[in-house]
Image 1 (cartoon, helix red, strand yellow):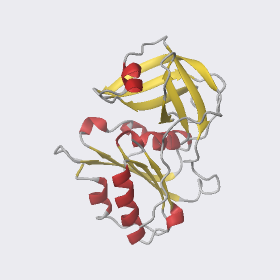
Image 2: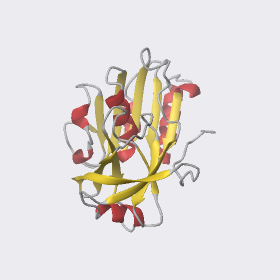
Image 3: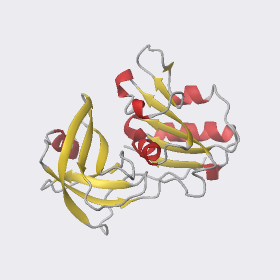
Length: 230
């Protein structure tokens, strides 16, 4: 099977960078933080990416925007990686510190002509939910469902921001009232309209397996938009 995957890998050096002050660092779990920085006059489309790093670090990593287009700040949902140079430096940030940000770039966005009339399915693993949070913050009246694959219940990032019944957590390593299993397990147990427009953001294995499941439900390849997180 051939599957076009959009992969986050490396900075777009043609995009101008600037320095931003840190407004908030909130650890949602031991290994995931919500980083808020000033917005200045930057514009972006929900779902786009920025490269980010503490000032002076010398290297950066890409993160999808978590905040909405109309928020007066920029937010990023960041998984702290053991041994990761950038994320370990981000872990040490405090309010008032500075980060260097370049962007926005990327095309993992909703199409304007589909926003008001389409049914959307947003499928994520872990912090891959970030662009979908931005979608919902920006377009709260769209017809959507979010399915997030996580290991533990405390990884349901931003769940309070979603309307009741529009968010499903698939938890693989804990027994809770949520669905027990992986995203792919859940998707094989529901019926989807062939007209559903599906956005997938997460690890490569999930995206490949989910793509096959959606195609089996007669969802056309043009209605499946993917982006791989590492």
